Length: 443
Image (cartoon, rainbow, N blue to C red; front, side, top):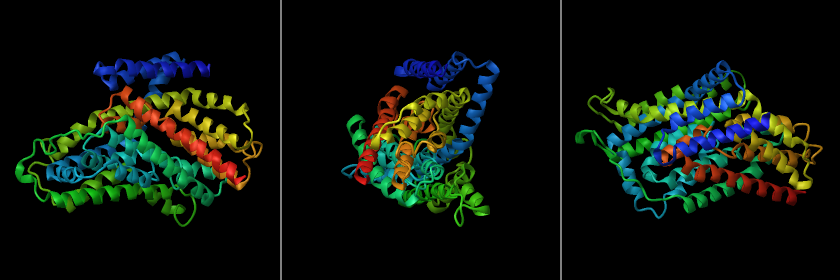
């Protein structure tokens, strides 16, 4: 039955891609219909699928919605204060805009989630990348690759902890592989997406008198972006369940720092204070608040629907059952790393959550590491990294990060699958190959 459910899931994805081609159907509506069709085809009752969908919708909006709204408010303030236009003009003379974005993504990949990191970096991305698809793709792929391979990203923390892997070894092997997949993502984005900025009116509907001190506003945007990413990285440190960073009350405090309400309030307040931006009616629906809310509402709902589809897939048990089918395969030698990678990749692809995929795959591999010849410290560290790489392969319609990248790069769902989803799959394959080579060298 699980194979049939996976087939129904694939049909639902293909349906969404087909009906949204060339803008014929709104992605939100197509994804909702596709989710319902998958639920009924997979054998879920109406009450079961609506309950699962509602829970997934609520969890996604709660986890990412306010962060997206915070980014939209920051972008609206930056536009109104002239920061976006000022930074865009400065970036116009750069030989490439993608290299700085790739570096930012590599560093920010250790944040609590790549989707949250991408969201808070979106205002800066708009300014530096000018709305070019290549810029959005570069940042998204860099975040995705780094998050699956670097400690203290939660995906790596979970897999390394469950497998009792040495964190020092995991970091020593993971860092060069993360740099490699970032370079692969950079090259893939350069080869497949346009780098031409999409010129837009960055101060639409704003009185010219409000465009004061754009240089100060640009500095404020840079500081706020760095600060919000730092809060998300601090939240990752809170996932370390040991003193002094993660134990007791310290853990809850660190986790709270990166939660959406804090990002929204702290980010907007800091942006207003540092930029000294003043706009008549700015806090009303006619000001930056209204413009930010209007630009974010559709994306937030879309992320919620994607979360509903992901939760439905999880509720069927289909991801775990299909991943368990792989456990009978026991590749020999360094090729044994294929198994943890494949288990995590199947989980990620079918149910959307990288963290759930990593935790489940690591749990399945606990007792298999030694029989596979991966029970030594190096083997366990490389197994954790293989799981992390698989847990980021491949991001598509049931993942909030996918929709954030598609929205920032102005890509249709089909175009985003052909670029971002394929890019994450290629990155995963390259990471797996690099880990196998490291195992051969270390043996």
